[in-house]
Length: 612
Image (cartoon, rainbow, N blue to C red; front, side):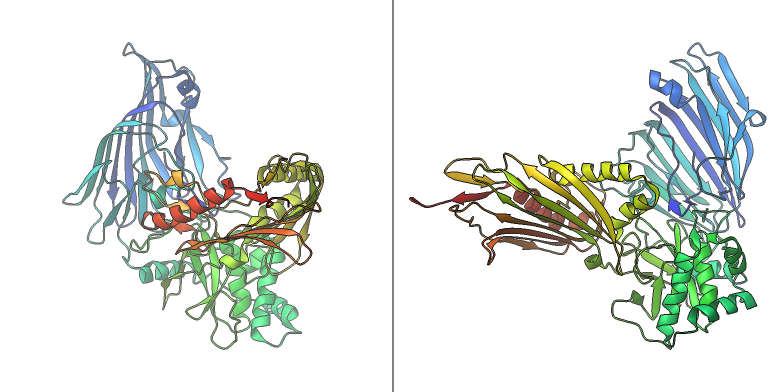
């Protein structure tokens, strides 16, 4: 039912997207100082033809820290007779489950080819978890409706703590003498909405931890203890560092040069960081093989920096817009990425460097831009600095000004109202990364197809001619796409002419916030659209009042002007300052979204006075 949380440097909940009804889901967890015993009992009702394929096999996931003690899967027909029965010894082992290059996760699969409508599946299994960090969670809702749910947890001891995330009104919960019991009836199918986070971050979910420190300093110290013997400076490492920094004097220059070596010379490969994969590979081995995952590359860079006398610490963080760590519940749940924090005492940094609390944060997994650029997928996230003596949770800033898109359209309109010209979309930051990856791996024909689809999306109705694309070198990843465009009916004829423009819309439609009780996740940055138009001789230039609105989420500014050359210039700038927008900020988000939608539906009029 549930895989380890931190796999392939990407957090996810592995729950089947099946349509059948779960009549009963009962899970009991017995906690101890070393681990957790899980007993799951699930009864599934096969109701539709699509269920036959969806449930033709059932997987129970294990890894190096999860042992399957027993398993029994039985299919019972509508007449009450047993149709099929699968025991633990009959399970098929499937190791290629897509969880990473060196993931220890294995699927133990029960094949159920004899299903018929009206059948019921009875699933019963016991797993023993022995994780490095004593914390876990269980989702309340699944992709399948549930008639009855029961989650019991016992044996956590004095340090047991729990939290029900966003399950109010769905389930009841009470503390017991040794733990907690959560139960519910007639639970609907999980229906993620656009812009929502993942299951763990927005819930509903039951989360718990036990046996280890209940504060962030304790969690950081635990991880530091697990990794303290990994860093080993060797002669090979020292020789490498000397060679890479021989011509550099300033310590900051040396830091960035070594960061570039870790980013650009050591290939990134997504390897499990979750249960069974928390410990990074020693620097010598990473150097020998030439690749590593996020924790390996961070540990490698840590070792290089130690060779020039600097202290650095591994940092656990969430990489992605879909989750936000809960700072009130100290545990390793929610982390799926590892970066590095370098103590800045003894060397100067620039105001643009991502420095917080005397630490310079670097992510050696990105091979585009400069070393000090951080992806917006980790900007604004809580970061756990795993310093054994001063472990702490810090929130990284959001540098929205480095992220964004700019669409510039230039051209002219003839007497018949036809437009011809060119369009350019310039993307910076993470918006450019996907295009850069495609440029590295895709055939030109495929990139051209993607480029044309993008222009059709942002400039609907335009006829496309030649399209081109290219990477832009600079401190932040950047990519530009260009197209020759035309539209024979751009302006409708008549005394009153209307110009309707397309813009780079950024925000959700305001109706998406109706009856919403979960956060909205957007991509921060600056999105600028500018139209530069040459009107036919004798046409009066448009007049329009500028529009401007701003609040805690961001701002929207739109102007219509005529430049010195007589060209009409329409400019809209939408700024989004943060990505994770809670329900408490929906009023401001709705205000901006409504304004953007209203401006996008509007048109610019060209009206000449009598005789004009």
